[in-house]
Length: 274
Image 1: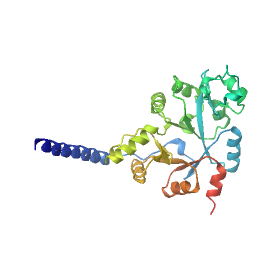
Image 2 (image 1 turned 135 degrees about the horizontal axis):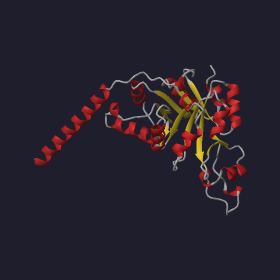
Image 3 (image 1 turned 90 degrees about the vertical axis):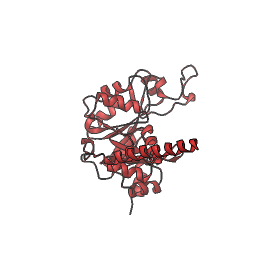
Image 4 (image 1 turned 30 degrees about the vertical axis):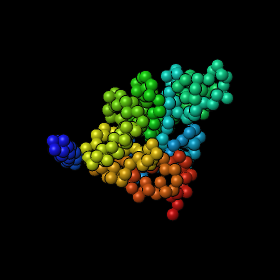
């Protein structure tokens, strides 16, 4: 009987705690979201993942108001690069091969086998009117200070949205540059799902500026429509993708995303035809 009583009391206490957390979250008020990055951006931003500078230029010619998603990596000599791909051991000698990731090689070594590689600063500087989402792939020592130094003088507070699966990278950069724009990490997405399953979605902590999410995460839906409703309640922008087929593209439209990530501009042109 005593065990039953303790169990009932524990359940009641847990319910009260969860209810209090939910009510606290729902009581929070959020200001309208405004940031220079979204000035002069289409109501529906189309963001293209590009793998080479030629793809970037071709996309600009076809759709001048497009935004670009760049996967950003680092080299062993501390250069910050884009347009990289995993290295094939067949491309170099056994002695020179240090794994598939660029961080094991100097910039010059990478250019010997991958001439399309560019330094991030050169690309951002070459297209001064263009806006970029930078997806930081490497959680290495000093990457936060390297990013800040690399983008200095290129108006990153107006042109750059920083994204990474590593929350520590965005937190570290935000401490140095609080006026930059930040997306969300994989941990943020998992936290939304966890809090929603506990019926306390409104209490989910989220310090990012923009909710950026794929459609699938670890083999299951990365978000629910209730998640997006909560993000909108907080007056934050929503970017979904990459959309891998027309169904996902149409779903993003139906859910009124502020931006959709696609891997090929030609797909968008096909999917958006009446």
